[in-house]
Image 1 (cartoon, each protein chain N blue to C red):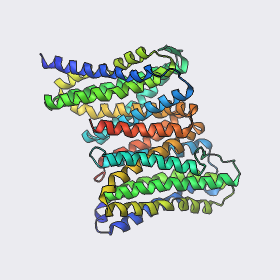
Image 2 (cartoon, rainbow over the protein chains, first blue to last red):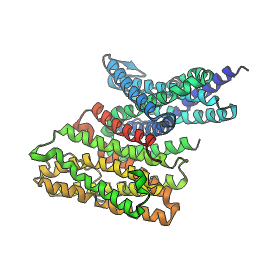
Image 3 (cartoon, each protein chain N blue to C red):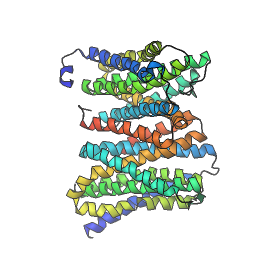
Image 4 (cartoon, chains in turn yellow, brown):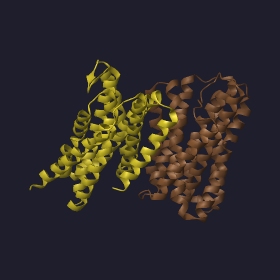
Length: 242
Length: 252
């Protein structure tokens, strides 16, 4: 098989794995304010942990480039947010603020998949053995990302299947970006820290601006703090051991 | 500066820089000099700035070892979260807001001082553990915490001066609540030097407790004082500066 198709298919597998993140929500019946707060806290911890890992990786390629990318990521969310505010949105089973937050989450996670796709493609330049390990790693680490997306969308009325589907959609840029990154390794290696910074900046901003205030509004602050800190640590360790 | 550190007795370096970090808290009263009062949103931004710097330090400690976090690190992290959580609960400070400028009960005043004392103990462990990784990284961490102590001192001083505590006494109390930092920094450093196996535990403990403190203490009330967008921006800038310095800086 053509190597380009192999890269694409591997990328597709990593995207499909994201859908598994919705599975825990098949077992949660009642979505009380406390569950919404805790779901937001889980998503926050996962995204902060993922960003810590991304920044550590990005700064190895270039510190300034990662930070410049991060500024871009924050600006991107600010602009997207401003645009979304102008419309009375209906998305994934909710309206208004809930719909905007769910859509913003999806945009953030999709954008972050672009950077991850580039990381997958670039890693193929290091040879097929390493690449396979990295693809499995990314597929497995996409599961908590699907969990983060579902944790934000499910309490706002999206069905479990809908959560799984949107999680996969958010990861589709991975196979799409992996191919050109593989073909043009040198070019993309230079772009990588910017992309990683962009993804991390957008995710951290989303967490602090949107998810945490909502979580604090619906549960005791130490309950939120415990969930976020434990999830953050677990995500960092999980990524490092893959 | 970092080259000269190698010639000084290591414990003295820990003592000097952790004392510097504690002492700098006094500078937090400067925005209040001349009887000025602080607008509420400035208190929010000060807390966000302090929180962002602290998350940055937690990030620096997490990536400092370069290796995957071992089991001891993970357990240390959980222990750090648990210890701060239980200390808050036991001292009745779990839901304490650090922004009530018009609260006059003596109880509130003592609790604010207590919560600042608990807070600084975790920072002391962070400085001690970072010094044990290597002294340059320790100095970097101590300086980051020193900068973090300034906005924290401002918030404390704003509460104290609104309770008619004189400005110079507020400055003294800001430093005094950070005294635990110096002690814990030296104890942590000495313990790791004596038993290097404790290193991942101490680093994990510091990361867990710092992250928990930001989320339980510094961030929640910020949002009520200033909008969530400005809070997110201030926090992110502080985190970004620390992350950038870690990537450019000395042997992180």
